[in-house]
Length: 469
Ligand code: MLC
Ligand code: AMP
Image (cartoon, rainbow, N blue to C red; front, side):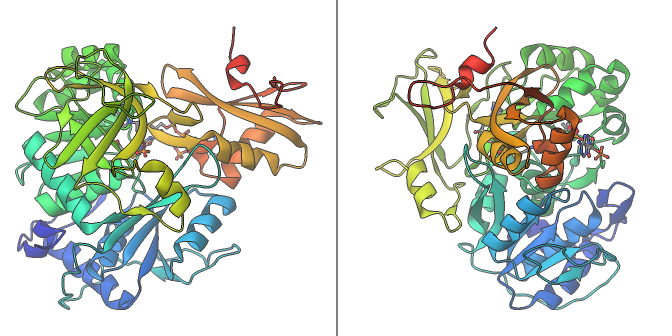
């Protein structure tokens, strides 16, 4: 069965099946536009896509997948450090981008191939093997540069079919969201989901409450920051009363936001849990209860366990807290070029170590309690490694030492704060410096200039003391 089943088989010519911002294509038009891209790409193994929230990104990603290439989304605002790393590490042979995009100005510069959604072709590309990589998604660890998680076509298909079952997601749905198109949430669920399962798609551009309100969707996706902003605008929230299902994920949905949404929209949101490396593994169901503070039960084909520090399984009693480990059909194939990192995430009996701390109740309901490593920050639903931001700060000539932490934030869940030792520095200057080197969302929201960082006797920075009091 083709990965993008519905897209491959549809004869539907209705003009706005897939809409991004204010431009749209029918199913047939999208297939033919993407086929033109696939024709150009013949033979390419890895294809980068400048992943703006645009129709070009949808056409480019689908073209890459039709051609059997592994698609590497590049955050469109990635600065030179992050972009060079992604392009070099992935070995992408070409960068797909909207027409008029200038050549890549960097140390690694694959040729830019323009994607024109108005082109059409009808070549039949054979369906690639399900074991082949479909996507390489770059994601942060606690230290160092982001790692490329290799996701097979089979894993993506398993994830989407599991979600179709859990959420009763069908071609009758109209999915609306405004998520970025370079991560699992916006790209795998938010674009490949409709193309496999047949719902129509409205990508609203920026995820503003008024745009969600106007989208007329039956199914809505958002990160908690988006839901919290919608709950703060009752008029927009009330427009979602006509929807079928509101889904939250990528970070914990605060219970007051759950309650406000339930009251204003009439829908108790469905929460689901996942990771770049595992895709979505646990979720509440459309035909079942939704409980604030919990993320539901394992999806079809997924098994979970919670273990103590010695790796021994803990009871499902709703109280015992330990590391959540998962296995199943949705798991990635490993990190590109990083066998060391792979080994660190697998147990001897081949379970994936999520690094999240969880409890499981007697009824199988999972609660995510927090993360084992404080150096992985979730801000606005984006995963950001403290080490990557520290490394970027340390390349500034005036910075001598830097320590980055995530602290609770009412809008973003966590915000990035950088503690910096250096000479003649300005806070705004350092924030802009990181925003230029990395992606904009990795910039610290606050910089604190300090005389010294607290260190223990071994010389290691004691981050917990930075945020005390
Ligand atoms: C501000 N801006 C700057 C800047 N300061 N630009 C450059 N330099 C500076 N110093 C600009 C930005 O360019 C942007 O402009 C605007 O300010 C706001 O940017 P932001 O800070 O990113 O917006 P913010 O309001 O904080 O974003 C909130 C948000 C965003 C919710 C919209 O965080 C978001 O989209 N989150 C989704 C993350 C996600 O999809 N995660 C899924 C991971 S997958 P402009 O013009 O662009 O507005 C996963 C698996 C799973 O986790 O389980 O799903
Ligand atoms: P990413 O790799 O960007 O997809 O981030 C994955 C991480 O997001 C997980 O390891 C969790 O820490 C967090 N996460 C995702 N969904 C949820 C959720 N529903 N509740 C709490 N944390 C979540």
